[in-house]
Every structure is written in C-alpha cells, then in structure tokens.
Length: 130
Image (cartoon, rainbow, N blue to C red; front, top):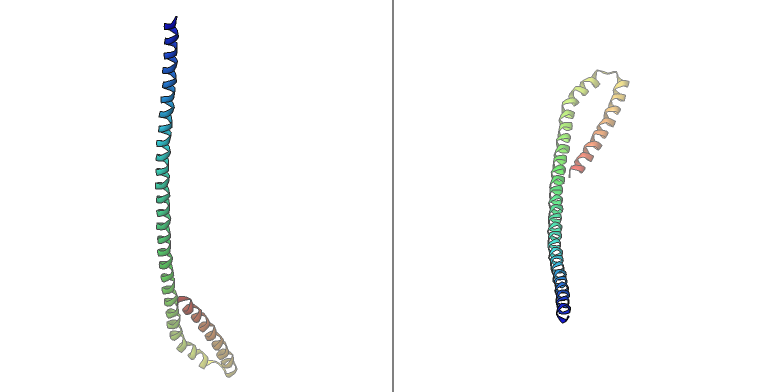
C-alpha cells in the first residue's frame, strides 16, 4: 500500500511543480509584455512630440510667409494709391478750374477732406506693414 501512496504523492508534487513553472512563465511573459508596451509607449510619445514640433515649425513658417505677403500687399496698395492719386490730381484740378467760384470753394474743401482721409489710410497701411 505504500507504493500507491508514494505514487499519488509524486503525482501531486509533479502537478504542483508544473503549476509553479506555469506561474513563473506567465509572470516572465507578463514582464516582457510590460517592457514591450512601455517601449512602444515611449516611441509613440517621442513621435507625437516630434510631430508637434514639426507642426509648430511649419505653422511659424506659414505665419511668417503670410505676414511677409501681407506687408508686401500693403506696400503695393500704398504705391498704387499714390500712383492713382498722382494721375487723378491733374484731372481733378481741371474740373475744379471749370467750376464757378462758390462751387470751387466747396470742391476744394471736399478735396482737402478726401486727401486727409487718403493720408490716414495710407499711414495706417504703412504702419501695419512695418
């Protein structure tokens, strides 16, 4: 009878040993997966950070380009306004000369106010371009 008891004990020890080995393997695999996931998380964070930096750099470049183009457009607009003003002044002078005296005074006052308004607009455009 000692033989079956010994066999059952041996079988129990084998089952317990296999359970311990299986538990150790599961723990080792769990640790490996944890390390792998941690590595992947760090890589993802690095890539995300790099993508944010690239986006910031591109946004800064685009912003600078837009600002430069806006400044150029303002400068061109001021030049265009000045050119148009130089071309129209002689024509407006001719119209003013043909008007009666009372109308000339009103016309001259209107021209003065229009010139002040143009100068204000040109000044704002020029200061915004700078």
